[in-house]
Image (cartoon, rainbow, N blue to C red; front, side):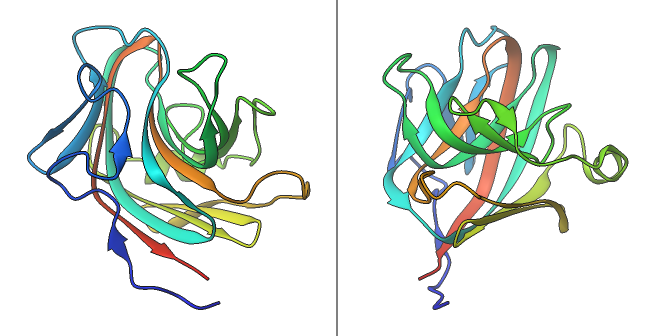
Length: 192
């Protein structure tokens, strides 16, 4: 597979290349993309999305998930599209983040289930709660792998050829909690 050079998916300054609620729920501070609130409950799922679609890629980022009240969850959507009903949702794969879902693959608004088993013992050792973690999503020819702090946590090959293997990328802040997701050093390397 031909590889391109990794490029910044988030420029560290503003929302160039992204669209979503950049007034109330998403902001940029000191080179960090932040979604959600620690003082107000996020009412419903919300996504900040790329304007560009991607098929095969390696995405690397650092994340920090904060919050103590309600459902504290986030994730990175990929091979996804925005849903029309309800319009705040997305449909596609999610590299999930949060207790009970860490570094697994969830099928958002489509099959509505986790597609990969979770090694809870390994995850307990890997996850640095309330600190920066390294996260990598690899999508290559229908095979999806997730790495958390350098360790592979999910390996899934899509058996259904009707499931799209291309789409936009979306960053989620889940509804129902006083939570913040922080992302930085986000880069993507497209594979052709």
